[in-house]
Length: 95
Picture 1 (cartoon, rainbow, N blue to C red):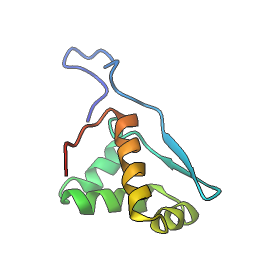
Picture 2: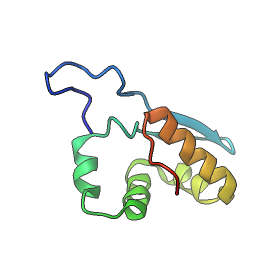
Picture 3: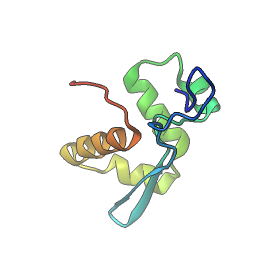
Picture 4: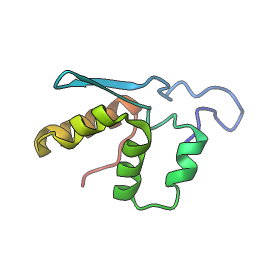
């Protein structure tokens, strides 16, 4: 996704700031889904949604943050992902 419009001006709806949450005392910092670096997009571009999500987590999170996410209970994890999407201005619809 791009932060510029077709005219080349900045898209005010694009969220550039990282999504940051504390999980059991560990800071988890994820890039905005609407402002991913080209290299990240390139690495996940051919993957299905689930594989892309987990590959992105593995690429951007240090091992302690990844372990904290891995240990979340499923309900909290869903809420965490929903909050990341909302922060990023991304609506993936109902699953």
